[in-house]
Amino acid sequence: MRRLLILAAASAAPAFAQSGQGNVAVTIYNNNLALVQDTRQLDIPARRSRQEFPDVSAQIRPETVSLSAEGIEIVEQNFDYDLLSPQAMMEKAVGQTITLVRTNPANGQEVRERATVLAVNRGVVLRIGDRIEVLRDDGLPVRVIFDKVPENLRARPTLSVTMESARAGTRPVTLSYLTPGLAWKADYVTMFDEKAGKIDVQGWITLSNSSGTTYSNADTLLVAGQVQQESQPYHSGGFAPPPPPPPPDARRLRRPGTEAAPRARLGDFYLYPLAERTTIAHQQTKQVSFLDVVGAPGRRAYEFRNPWLGTMDESRSADTVLKFSTSREQGLGDALPAGTVRVYMRDARGNGQFIGESNIGHTPMGSDLGLKTGEAFDVKVQPVMEKRERVGDARWRTTMRYTLTNARPEAVTVDLVQSGLDSYMDDTRIVSESMKSERRSSSEALWRVPVPANGSATVTATFDTRY
View 1 (cartoon, rainbow, N blue to C red):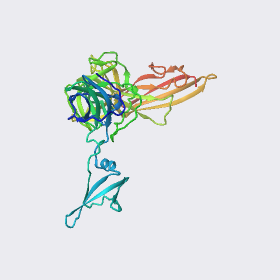
View 2 (cartoon, rainbow, N blue to C red; view 1 turned 60 degrees about the vertical axis):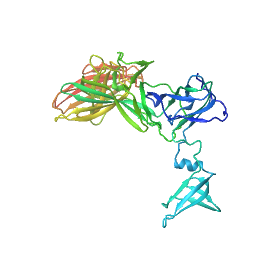
View 3 (cartoon, one colour; view 1 turned 90 degrees about the vertical axis):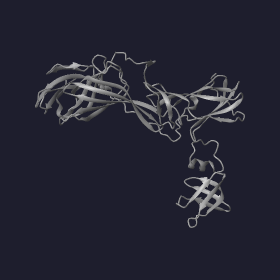
View 4 (tube, rainbow, N blue to C red; view 1 turned 120 degrees about the vertical axis):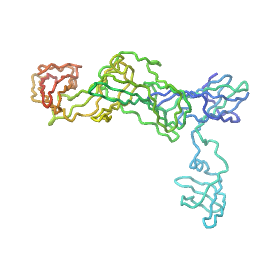
């Protein structure tokens, strides 16, 4: 049976230390959270006893602990994450007596003295007989002998559980808990062949463990999505959580997909199980492949986005963008968990060269993506406000000219976007334009402008606005 009740201090019970983890399953979420389920074989006596579980996470959330086994009731549980170290040993010895061993460097003879530890505060203050002495780190041969290890100092993070058992015998006990310090994200390596109009994409799961514990031979399941969490008080046992990933730019998802990916789900989350059990060592980052696509369609494009009728004194570079799809028929054929896409392109010698990277959010299958890889050297745009006049009490007309130049030896097409059109009121109209635009939303107008090789092009437009 299972109980999560924590009672007042129980009567004394002998401790039975377990050897370590058993059959471990780890479910890792994107937002620095993991569910650990550890099934161990325990020899439980037919009475009240205290069972110790070493090798739990140093960042375990004790309030989430659940212990499940046949014929037991939980009386009390304690989590000891104050780990054994020379500094911790000395701090716990304040007010107690230790043995100080000094070695005479001239003859090698040892001298032992009993000392009482008075304070440990940026140094150790001792009482030795009738004198007070500071234990200095001056390079002289000296060591400290402690009479015992304090009970609440552990060599490894340890959970102790006091339980009542109706019968004696060995049986499986499953320990479950939530912990921060385990995280994963996706990383993508993309090789772009512009001449062929193709991309090769390899997706990697990048696991990181800063929880303070190694999870050996773990059955690992990754969940793509942000599960809801209330803010938690943070204790780390000395381990810092990993920094959150940078947020993706929403403009990189040009059209969200509507295709269901061929993957298992948990509610509204996609599941990415690792094919084989793996050991996730503390302070380790490891990568496991989950996607390998060769020859998906991809193309380079140029984009320039002008903020609310902005004017510029000089030309600015257009963005270089890699466009592709995650659809089943014309793309990668999978849902993409959030991560970083790094793009490489082959040079004239056939060597892959890095040309840029972008962060993406969780992307459903069938989506169209446009990832900025950098800024174009030879393709420039200069927006200029030519005229602005009042045409009523609260109406204005603004004429914009956009000059596009191309120093490349081949023609290019630039997606010219005028954004911010609903910055004040959602009633902006284009009353005249030199080429037809596409109104992608109330806030954006798009012109697909062909620019000849070693040439230029101009677009003009007049906007009727509230202000």
